[in-house]
Length: 405
Ligand SMILES: Nc1nc2c(c(=O)[nH]1)N[C@H]1C(S)=C(S)[C@@H](COP(=O)(O)OP(=O)(O)OC[C@H]3O[C@@H](n4cnc5c(N)ncnc54)[C@H](O)[C@@H]3O)O[C@H]1N2
Ligand code: MOO
Image (cartoon, rainbow, N blue to C red; front, side):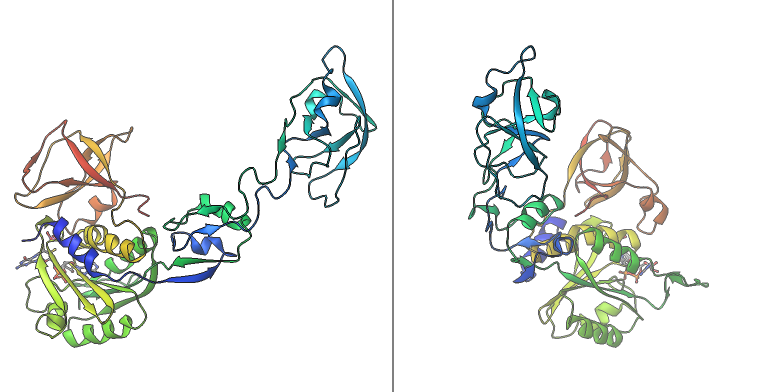
C-alpha cells in the first residue's frame, strides 16, 4: 500500500500547470485566489502628489518656529484646499492655507499643523506649536516610485493586495486562473439534494459537499452531475465534462463491489487510469487518471472519506495547477483525550479544539459514514500509521477545517 504522502506527491507531479492569461484589474474580487504570473510594476508614484496627513493648515515650518502655547503665531489664511482640489496652488511666505486630509499641499508649504494645535480660524489662524519641517506631509512617491515592483510573480491575490493593484495605474495583469472543477457523484442509490430518500436510497450529499469544498478551497465549480452505476454512463459523462473542466472529481465506485462504475469504466481500458489502496483511514481506495489533459480524481463514496480525500489529494493537486503551494495550512495541537487509531494506516481523525484552540479531543464516532461527527468537528488530526493509541499530552499535526483557502 502507498502512504498518503507518496500518493499525494504522485498526483501533484501528474497534474498539468495551468497557463497564465491577461486579465483586467477592474474586478479585483474576481481575481482573489489567483496567482500573479509576471511581476506587477506601478506605472505611477504613490502617493501620486504631495498631500496632507491631517486636517489643519499648510505652512512653512520656518514661519511658525517661534510659536508656543503662551505666544501663538498668527498667519493670514489664503483659503481652503479640500480633498479633490485639482488647482495648482502656492503658499506665500508668512501665510497659511486651510487644508484637509488627502488634499494637495501647495507649493512652498513644507508642514501641516493639525487643527487641534490652532484656534481653527478661517480669516487668520493662531498656531500654538512649532513643528519640524515635513510634519503631517505625505510626499509624492514616498510609498512607491513609478516603475517599482509592487506585487512579485507568485503572489496569491488576497484582499490586502487590492489597494496597490487598484492604484498602480495598470489596466491588466497576467494571472493563472483558478482551476475549474467538475464534480460527479456516482451511485444508483442517490437522489438529488432536496429529494426524499426512499428505502435503499440516500441523498447525494457528496456532490454538494465537494462543491462547497471547491468554493472554500479557492477553486471554481465547473459542473455538478449525478450518474448511475454503469461504466458506459460514467465514461460518457466524464468525456463530456473533460472538454470544459480543468479537473474532475468523482465519488463512489472505487472499492471491491460487483458494480463499481469507475472501475468498470476505466480499470481494463487503454486509458492511463490507476486504482490504488492508500494506507489511510478514511480514504483507502483511490483512483486517478488523465482523460486527455484533464485529471480525474476518483474518490471513495463514503462522505467522510470523500471529504478527507478532497483535502489530502485533490486540493494539493488543484493548488499546484493554480501555481500555489500544494500544502494546505496545517498546525499542531496537544491531545486532551485519548483515542485509538487503526494499525498500519494514517488516521485522519475528526477532532474539536478546546476554548483556547490548542488542545484537541476526538468528536463523534470515527466511521467513514458518520455525518454528525463530521459536522461537529473543527479539524482533522493526522495520526501516523505506527500509532494505535493517541495518548493525552502528545502533539499531533492538525488540518483546520475552516479557512481552507
Ligand atoms: N469488500 C470491500 N468492501 C469495501 C472496501 C474494501 O476494501 N473491500 N473498502 C471500503 C472503504 S474503506 C470505502 S471508503 C468504501 C468506498 O466505496 P466506494 O468508493 O466504492 O463507494 P460506494 O460503494 O459507491 O459508496 C460507499 C458508501 O457511500 C455512500 N455514498 C456514495 N456516494 C454518495 C454520495 N454522493 N452522497 C452520499 N453518500 C454516498 C454509499 O451509499 C455507500 O454507503 O468501500 C468500502 N467497502
Ligand atoms: O477508506 Mo474507507 O474511506 O476507510 O472508509
